[in-house]
Image (tube, rainbow, N blue to C red):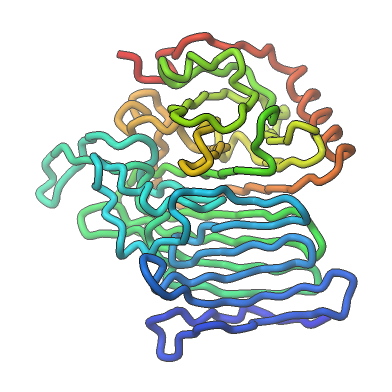
Length: 394
């Protein structure tokens, strides 16, 4: 086995840069693995860096240029991706996040795993902040914050005897405003269908600053199809709005693509293990033979949203599983509900998320049994209409 330690990856803008580099590989063992990197050229993808990891079973394409998100993955026959109208990764230099009333974030939205934050997430809207003179002013916040459109300034690779690890560092900072740093580690063991994302967000300033984080994990075919289901233990679930209430009777099931479908979203209060508050959420196909399982703690992500956009194939047939520090409402509303944490000067907050691809009926049944055990500790309640504690219905 080849062992490498902490190889810095040279990004464009450094003295050498790179086009395509085979960074490390070992094809001699039972789980042949490799790591490579390249830079996309042409059109809106110009200058986007990609780091591809292949652990012998699971392949991932990480995007340092887009906040260390994961563009797509493949595990055996299971695709971890979706077919967005945005066909290629977009360089943040071409994104105006205030376009279309703060929806410009969607012009670069095509990744499987996308972070939202670090200072704000959720719907665009006005919020009150302090300006450089210390005065309270109203400013527009764009959809889902800035981190997905912020390039990493440092990326390194570590290959051990058992795992491939990519680390990145991304700053969301300004004078007289938030100064937050994301340090992320994406780790996958050789021959495994799982990856673990460990994120640490630090307030680099001396003043306290608000911090929000949401993982937008998005799936198309083959996991999303007519008859697919989401299985998660919950105390309560409620539709986000009147449109979502129209589908509450099948909130946990999915239909085939439907031209003209208007998105729906459902807000969950999940149940977790006593003490650790560990929980799970599973998306499985109709046959129960393939799935993707999220494992995380409610201490890290106390809120969970299911986003459904089962529109026509050309318009983005997709569902999103969204663990977060808050629900994706406007930040002003989430603050009023006490769901916007604050980091003191120099303070850090770390979160851990494991995503495992399941490719047998036995594995799916076991995951569903584990979720059922968690559900036994909580009485599940489904609200037919939006509720004021979770949605802004004023």
